[in-house]
Image (cartoon, rainbow, N blue to C red; front, top):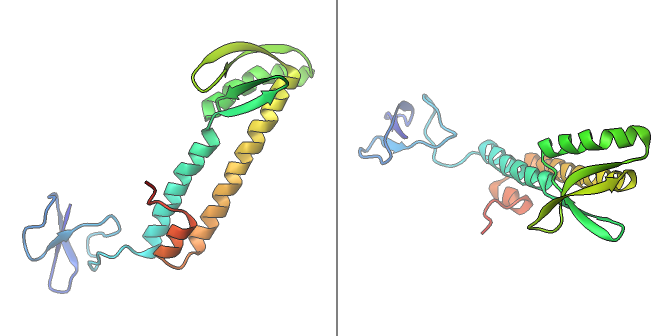
Amino acid sequence: MIAVINSENVIINIIDKEIPNANNQRILYPWLNLWDVYDSAEPLWYAKERYIKAAGAEFASRRDAVRFVELGDVTYGFDCAVDDITNFMAAFTPLLVNKTGTVFYKVWLNTMDKAVVELNYEQMLASYNEVRRSQLEAYAWYEEIKSKLLASKDQEELEAIFSVRRS
């Protein structure tokens, strides 16, 4: 998109083109709107939003990552996305209510293979506790990063807190 500016540098029109081809045309950045004074420098408020969104994506990745939990002499991986947590709780709730029993549940045997295994109450409880602990850790990480990003004073500080320029 292209911003068309007047002699006072105010955006008076926005056109659907990719490359400016006149002296009064400039690239339209996402923080600019019609009737704004044109400024190609990214404002701090917009940079903060961009960094918080990137941190939010990292948080979601951390929150939803497969958790490998050692259950006695075997380690199983548990999917942790929202739908997976719902499925886990549906399988675990009867055991939780009765404080005993077993359930068949699909788990990761390693990073490549899944299978249905029989898990008892203690194993499901241990899995629940580990997943909950690690997800709360991800939430705490995000809230800490977000508060630091909101308090930052410039672009360099934002990048030092949470790098979005990862290779």
